[in-house]
Image 1 (cartoon, rainbow, N blue to C red):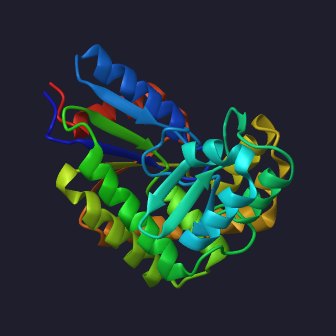
Image 2: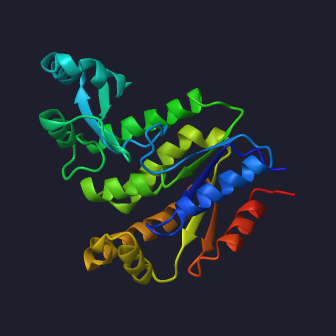
Length: 263
């Protein structure tokens, strides 16, 4: 049997094995007859991730649809409404939803992964708190959810790039998000490597992303890892750290299953 855990989080720097372990655990749960869903980075149906979403106020959104009448229905079909905030998803891992000037406009209003903040830090935090709260309210209570990189990675990566908050502010933001889903008895598994530089250099070659091996990116991820360890020590969240520098996925899976009280 498994603990009454309805949300399982996998975290760690890029290339730490989050996707691999999320998929392996998902397959194991299904094999054991446990209804579960896994959500990976960039999934179009992700309940909390907001990468590739353009931000508009209510008035701005009305102008957007009025100025694009032939595409208004398509825009609306990809829109999430949070009060007076409108978020338009314009692409996913499979490709772009729009083209030309409209795509360029939406990309320029990117909420999370743009080059400049689309909203204030307070608005960013408000949107994500509401996003997590809605997930808890709307989810199927009969199913376990597995998230890869949705709590630490996507929040801290965007906060650090766009807003450069103090560590305490970042941890405070994570605490606010945790308050929204703490009723799900969540558990976090952190996948760690001893040498961040070596890990990122290896992944840079495997994924053909040379910037992963740059000194600036490595320093960024090292600082992010320090904040994540601080968060795990301060947040009221069951957290387990697994060093998987040797990429022994079977060993890590056994540790994960042990923490989940499988018997």
